[in-house]
View 1 (cartoon, rainbow, N blue to C red):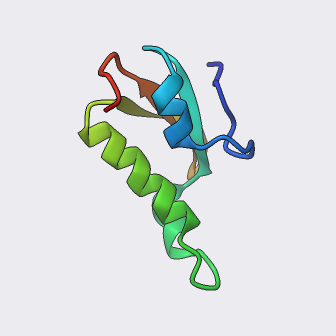
View 2 (view 1 turned 180 degrees about the horizontal axis):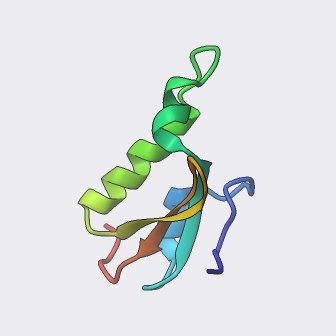
Amino acid sequence: MTYDVHPSEKYTMLDWVKEARKGRAYLYYTGFICRDVDREKDGSTKIKAIRNLAWSLYEKGLVTLVQKKLGPMSYEYIAVRTNRQFK
């Protein structure tokens, strides 16, 4: 699968969802998000924030969320744009 943006680039998921066409994919995290949220250091909430944003966009019908298994406890977390308009 080809992604529009890798999370290391300076382009946010929200920017992407505003511009992306139906069927475009955005890789928003690689790892094991449930475990990694609990392991964030120094009070950081970066992983939790991207997870919550992805879920919020899903609840609004703007994306479908999928995972691709890479190995044991390792996944790519991907948002796929739906045809619903961003408001």
